[in-house]
Amino acid sequence: MTDTNTVCRYFTTYSGVKLPFKLVGELGEHEIHNRNTFFRGYFDADGVLLGFQKIVYGDVELEHQYSYDAEGNLRQAKITDADGKSVLLNR
Image (cartoon, rainbow, N blue to C red; front, side, top):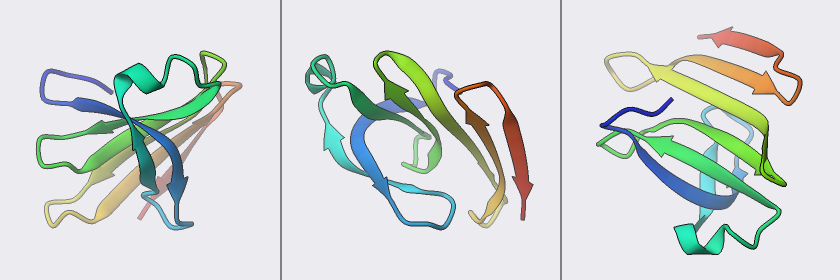
């Protein structure tokens, strides 16, 4: 999910029930070291959320990967659970 144009930021949680989720409660990198749970969000150069990982005790418990159409609408979401099982949702 990362490349040279992707920015990683950290958050306490997310909001919303519609995809893509909105990450809220931004944390500085120094703030995640003493947290049991946080979200690691990946953004493109324009600040669009490409995906996130929910980190619990150092392990990835949940991962979302998003792709968008030319107009910026969500086109596809890949959701992977802690067991590595994925679901692909197309719009």
